[in-house]
Amino acid sequence: MATGWAGDTAVQDQIDATVDDAVKRARSRMAKGPSLERCEECDKPIPEARRKAVPGVRLCVACQELADREEASFSGYNRRGSKDSQLR
Image (cartoon, rainbow, N blue to C red; front, side, top):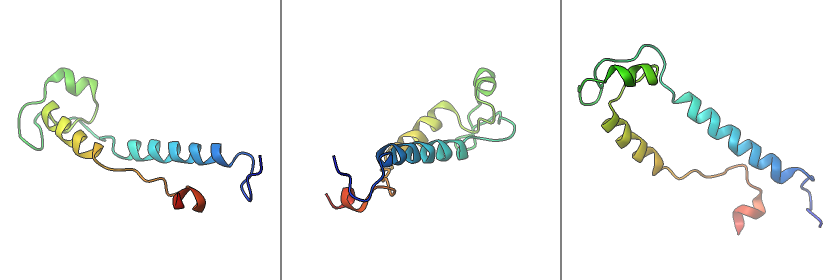
């Protein structure tokens, strides 16, 4: 099947680039430094078990769930797509 100007690995290259971008974005959002004893949003205590399980934790579970929901509403857009795939 003819792919026009695209190389034989173009589709897989696009998938790999999208995954790499998502991994970089997730790693950049990981907390760094020491864990907090109190949530920086609501000031509730963060249990010791959570501080050990999640190094650098800054939010309690409730605040983290809220932040995760807000983040999930973000609509990722694959900007590496070909011009043809964006026109469809």
